[in-house]
Length: 219
Image 1 (cartoon, rainbow, N blue to C red):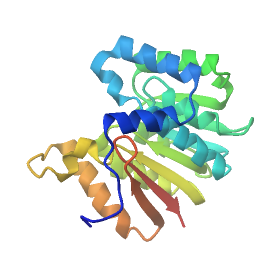
Image 2: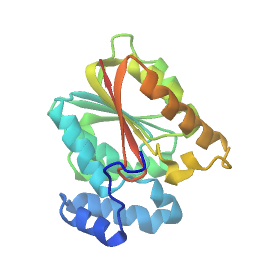
Image 3: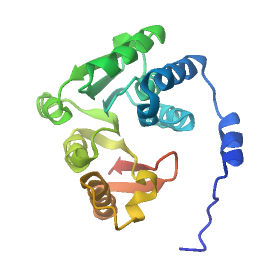
């Protein structure tokens, strides 16, 4: 709806939004190191308000066991792991030893290493090798876009009722609306976006946080 109730964020309004959300010194340090070491690749890191949002959601549903696909330098993993109880577990899937080496240093600083298991392998291989009784309460998908639908299907069958799957980058810097962009990643995101509202197994909402987040609640 063109006349729907929404607000276009200016840089000034966005800065106001961030200034009135939780702040964290360790996460700020990690964000600064990621930016200084990674350059333009640092844009892969989630935003500050997105991290807080994820922590609140995971805590609100009482998540104990979580999985993350796409760990990068560990910011989102910290946000999820902090929400879990002392005996909670977070499985992180990535393929970069270089990037996740930074993550592991910060997990240690945050006192979260004992909660987190890192698997350096293609995420689909890791998921499919899990025991049949491995069940998750919370999942975050932020890996290679071409496999988004496969990641979603693999996680959904391991998600408990009322569990949540969060899917990142669903607005793809607005390129989901640019029909001239037919790159494989863009087409994969569009395909998942089009499919999810019709999936009777879940309730779905897409939110304009950062680059767009879709939340799926398993019925």
